[in-house]
Image (cartoon, helix red, strand yellow):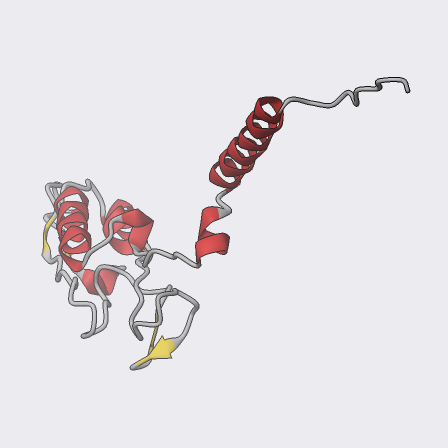
Length: 141
């Protein structure tokens, strides 16, 4: 009888290959954002990633302060206070999908017309530092 030994891969080589493949899959999911699809995780999104009513209120107040430094009413009208679009999950379904709640669309309101459910509204009224002393307010947006 002849003694034939089968040639094969050692068990440690197979285990290392499996670990390498799993690591590559995890890295690929991380890089492509696939974890949210795999685990169903989804963060509530608000304006620009600010994440809270308080943060958006502070941002709106800052926009107002900057806008009131505008030399003309036309520049005030194009300021962040008038133009920044806020987004919030008003109906608490963990997504901002354009649902209309209380007459306001979740992804389309501004510092000056925020809904009651998302109280960030800042009434930015003041006199511009120009020769005319123009008085501006949210109505000028």
